[in-house]
Image (cartoon, rainbow, N blue to C red; front, side, top):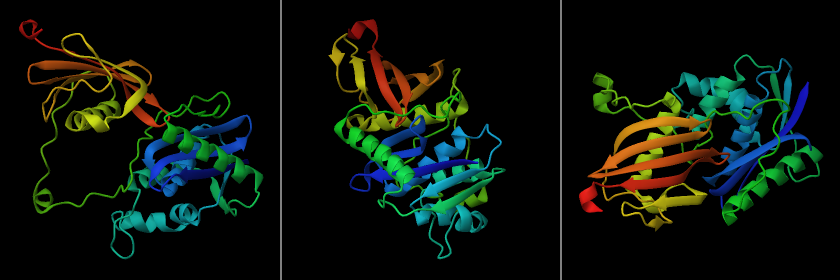
Length: 289
């Protein structure tokens, strides 16, 4: 049996947040987000642990100091699914995207959960808590953090980690009950559908609010006239037209889009905290240069 502790930490709650699971000093992993909650961290720690051990045919015992996580995954989840991801009082289930991924990751696995009291000297719980808190602190300071060695001889999971605060199942509106919405046009390119969806969403969000773009610490930008830009070089266009999304390497995507008569090539890289914009270059017709 594999025994692991899972924990989360958030500064300000919500705020810079970290998660970690811990088996030993040689087998652990951690990650986080710029904006998250304690509960998100606790859930993500369990999810990454499940993903990291999915190739093993061994029972898994997860040590948690969160009754919310244990009850959610062992008692409440089946009822939430039957009710369309609603709680007994009719309110939407929070962190629903995490819950859905956890539901899928638990399917067919032999997993049991054990509650341990937090901050009470339990060695494995303390080790997970320290690592989760270290990630949250590093993100708050804009510093790199140690994501850990992961599980031996196993690639780090590449599934999504870019969850956001307040995820709920969307309510259908009156018209969506009558007829399905037209599907969005397919985006060309060699990237997977998941990568296309993720990077398309991030690109549109960055174009709408450049100041809030998810930038890599080493971000570099080049303006249409060849100058250097330390902030995103998005043109003043409210709705960019996506041209294509390609995979350059595992965890590296190239998005090309146009805004007005300016074309932008943007390179996004996946880090433990999610996707970050590493480089962007704007190009304009020769007459404008």
